[in-house]
Length: 426
Image (cartoon, rainbow, N blue to C red):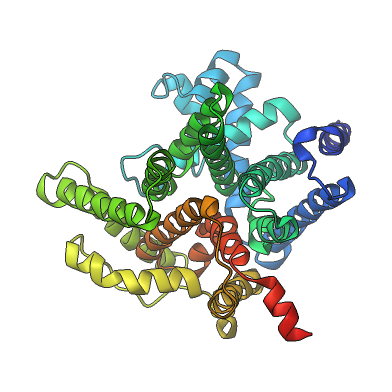
């Protein structure tokens, strides 16, 4: 039965990709998009192999699936209990707790007062089991289709402002780590879906307002709230600055981005240190400590020589350069530890190659593109700072920075005068 369902959904997704206008790109043969999808399926096979036959460790790929499977079992005993778990109703009742006791990662080891993102992704896995069956292969297939939709939304956002179709295709769809970590139903899949919906809705709302784009934008924000609140924190100043720049046509667009970031830090600092109402810095200090402690317990081979950080303004300021550098540069190409770090090391190197090309072959953007460029840079830098401050393991950094790839790397790529490079080479 699982094989029949797998073939059914594979045919459904392939037909949608082949026929639906959403997946069509002018000038690009449709078999190319099918090839992207097949590539993602092969990435699922690779990811499964890495964590079953190569590392032999209990990764997130299996944690969320196994917990969802344990909770999905409730549907065989009580549809009411299943729906309560799925929608988070009456979770403290004994009838629900008997299922929760069969999970390992429903409750995180460390909590910070936010929505528990583990529970969000486990519930999504449960929903997909209800729709497509309990086979892990089907879960992989759904994850690949959802992530393809996500990256198409991001591609469509960029293509509204840039005409370099092939450059956009390469840097949005073909970054290896993005393909690999979106090949299973992990948090990254929902993060990218939320980002795709939010950014595409944002740009379309300002081009020609429509309720469907507003709904898309709001749904994207809700997904980010439920799965990775710190990504939304990084996105917030960029969103506000983008809307304001578009509405008021400010000349120096970067000024508003910088001003809002500074104002945001000051507001969070006052709320945390002075009023003790917003434990933002305390939470990030706690995340750093927990990252170090967990790496020591699990004997992580890529633990960085970082000290625990005290939640004081000066400590966060002094840690900022190293935090951003670690997020951008690690893992180093000469310090690869295991097969899983090969792609991230090459991607870190790619960033510096792109940056050098921008410096030596800079292409001045059009006025209509500048605001979105600053949006991408602002979001990327703030998220890199958050990751570098809170994460003490190279493997974690490599995975958590996946959301920046289509925004930072694609932006750098479109700022390169490729004609100048061709003329130099020829």
